[in-house]
Length: 192
Image (cartoon, rainbow, N blue to C red; front, side):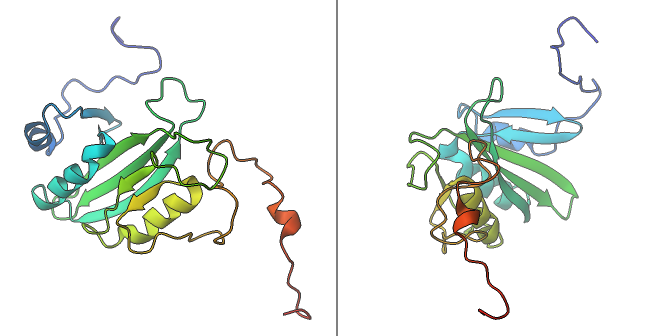
């Protein structure tokens, strides 16, 4: 380990080749604030939220990433040196080349994150126009984290009921809930 390596970083092998799509990404998005990282052979491109849809479209149309494997949210509350409170990560796959790339974008809430009110800072453009299969993943991210996707064809909760009072995968949400279990009506065979 060299003196330049920071504590906690796993050094990458010096002979590891650059990701096959990085040259095209650098060319198309120079000066737009993109960053890239490689960890254990997986490449992640960190993109500002205002150009994430453009990057996803370029990766699909020009680089052949024809399969959106996953879309998910991450809450970085209390995480040291986090760039934002929330992140949305897109896991893209080129089936023909058997290549994978992750695209991550950070979001910071402007409202108190404990409620269900819509925060204009927690909005991203939908990827359903690029990959129709993103519909369920984006709905889950909305339901669990409160991140909305503008242009989504059916932006409603998918795992909790519509009047659910919060977003349960946020780190400031209590593990035992906020009384939802106590107020939930239990159904029995006799009452059903």
